[in-house]
Length: 242
Image 1: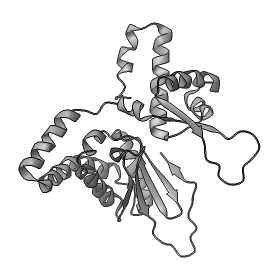
Image 2: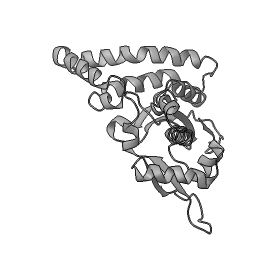
Image 3: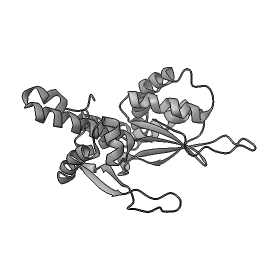
Image 4: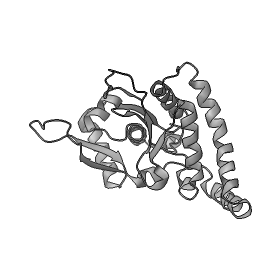
């Protein structure tokens, strides 16, 4: 977890406190990657009991770092209480580092003032060029199917710190990024999101549509990838790759 400053400080606290810091960092990372999860799911992933996980979640909830809600039911509702899932709050995401945000914003404002929107777009394209090349290399064995390429791209983006996942849905696929390293800057300069969307389109090999962005206040950056229509084929709604 390279973005966790707490991990660098575990050597100067008591053993129990260090363990708590590590557990909370791991919970934060899981919720960042998964989006939402129950205490049981988190416990299984971390090798802890649900009660042990809830102790940390309760503390994080009291600090405004996580929120809890009922998981939407799919199909007929069974007996018992609906499952409750946890997710990171906007305040928790604010604690993740956004490297050189102030400097980057100031630089883009200068470019916009002296060169206009076209130069800002050119700068954004240049910035994501390296990311595109690294992802393309990581996707070398992905084949030509856009959905298979989306899955490979999700893995490549996760390695770059975007906590991405690809999901197959009825109309094709969705690429979800649960973290954006430049969200604060992109909130003012949408050209960064547009350049990234063009990279996704080129890498998966088809037109894509951005449905939501963290920079715009949404919880996840979501990109729709239309499926290739296969006569008689039935879409798999369950395949999920993280």
